[in-house]
Image 1: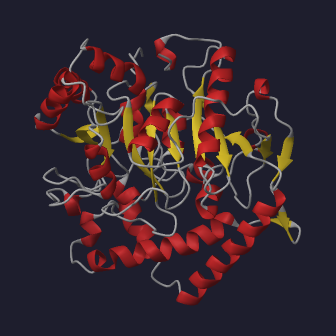
Image 2: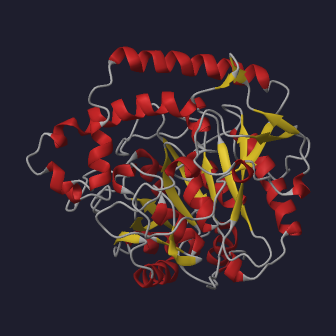
Image 3: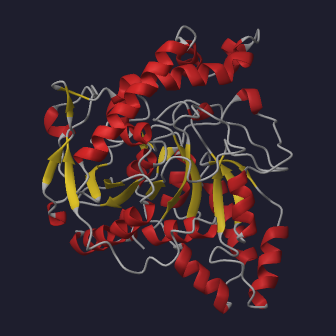
Length: 447
């Protein structure tokens, strides 16, 4: 498929020079969204924001580089007066009275929310194939999944419907669909972006973030919502110390070792390092994650699970997964948090002299849509979940190989609070991947 990809930067320039208007771009995005059902659950038909942006643009009084830019917001994020469903029948008619904090920030920056993007129900799944509003197909092969849980956000960007989308990431839910769809996806340092007004999955790991066409799109978005350390990152990260990280720490991915050890592109040429061991074994990231995630998710949903219609209202996979947290004790959760602190100290010490770690984002191609829900989840999160557990920032950058219609993705990982370094490194790597790409046509997602 061929998609026209406008970046935040190029579209912003057209808005400022009068080549197009915010109103025209909102109309175009809504029309594209309608053609790409079910990428969006709800589209926003109100043109007040676009009209206000056009007036400010005419007066050369843009509030930020996002003025008039159409964006998508994942449908677990509250939008005042606009239906917010969490991808679930429980909330099929829910209309919040107040915006989530990140929505308030984006509106204040002049961004125009044109729709609520589809999501795996309650963000509780990495395939994006279990929700009440249809499964989002992969933009490059509709027989395959788009990934989750921010499936609609990734597909909306990859299809060129919007240049920027908001997602959430608890175990890879921004980076995995970005990788499978061919978008850039950024999970910042844990708690860097305010998650107030976002329906929680597991508050210990939930992180808001962005998906875009380029790394520069992400930089613009982060700066627009007030992250002071990210403003002018015109210099790339060539002076940073890069290492290529091998292996899957403490995860049983169920796929052959040669696939889990899939190399990042040779042109990046970073020396190899490996995950540290703990008493001869890798850190059990998935074990501690599951303990905390399962208990926290159960407590969030406990009131809904008591409903007589719960087993009918929830998707079967979500319902069964939520039950797993019922018997987990406070002591088990506390021990898991203590283990995470120990792992975190070891990782900081092990990589004290390293600025940036590189890995694949996912070690497999997008799985088929017709598989049983949940199939392949271990493999999909195998490279991603560690950085949710540790709270480190991580960025997914797509690239394409010859004669392969599906994208691949490099993951760029940094220390907590070093988000600017990750994005600087990301710009450098994006340039290398662009130069080394074997194809540049729009069907492979490049603009």
